[in-house]
Image (cartoon, rainbow, N blue to C red; front, side, top):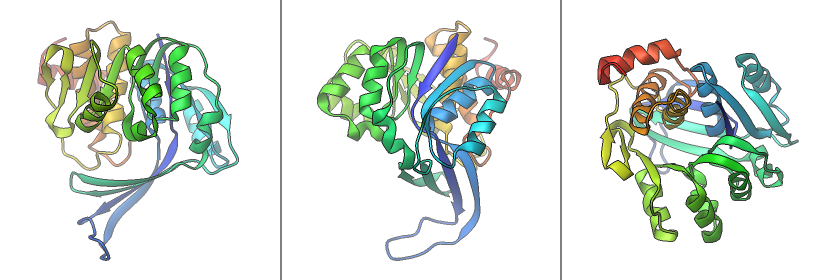
Length: 278
């Protein structure tokens, strides 16, 4: 089973600070690192590193070559729209477990020009609403994750994608916004709650977060979805897939960067420790 992931690729600039600066004040940066990122790329890389098959459909900016070579080396199948603009960038500031992020769209602004491609299994990560809608039309089975781009959807486009989606991933704020704008009925909704775990709404079932030494939470949600999809491709039920998502997420927060995935054997070992044998 190959999972197509559509959405952003980006360069992440991750900063560790003692505390977040208040307005008109400053704070010291104690450590920083430039990493490969972008929600869609994080998920596609995660699926592949965990032993699954993935295809990334995204925009490649004029400075994307090194990132592209890295993705090819890992084995992620690529379908890229070429742009002369710089690749998107995320500027992320971590003070303990509190994070502030600023996102520069750059080449991602041209997502609206991309044509939809067919897919059997699709994950719509945050992306341009027009592309999300058209990809949804051509997918046999897909999950929708509005993320930070939820505000870019008009009511009609959002209603269509939500109604057609087989699975919806969101946080509590996004769920409230979608319910307010279009309503959600009879859907498999998985709500991520950070260190509080996640909830499978249809079953009113809470999945615990796995204890970890948190260094950087960047990409934790993407790791959850990567773990979910790999478990899904192995035939596990939704509850077990979410548990695997929680386990994979716990590995990501232990290092700086969103793509420090373990192999599946390590995931299974940690799964057994916290949830018992699968």
